[in-house]
Image 1 (cartoon, rainbow, N blue to C red):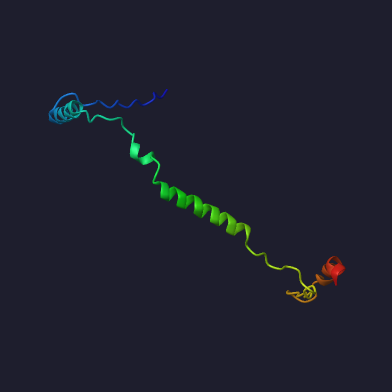
Image 2 (cartoon, helix red, strand yellow):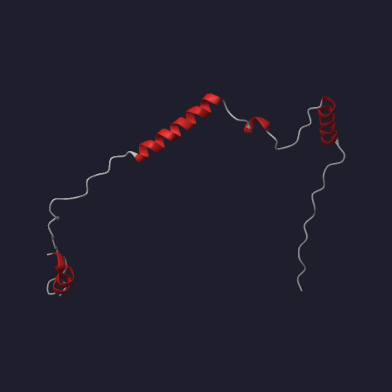
Length: 107
């Protein structure tokens, strides 16, 4: 039977020059009161200026009104378009009679 392969866990440094440097840096930040929570950027989620917000609201309202007032194309024609039937293919293929029977209601 095969055993499941186990990988070694990561060991965080607890000695050495790098660990000492990181420890000193952390203690310095704590003493200065600069320790802040990770991932919290307060400035990123504050409201922007009042004028910018007003401009955005006005622009969205104008776009909505423009969409409502778009002139529609006149699709009513005075006479229907001519019916044109083109058959492409080898000769002696009986395509035309059934096609005419199905589409002959508006001829």
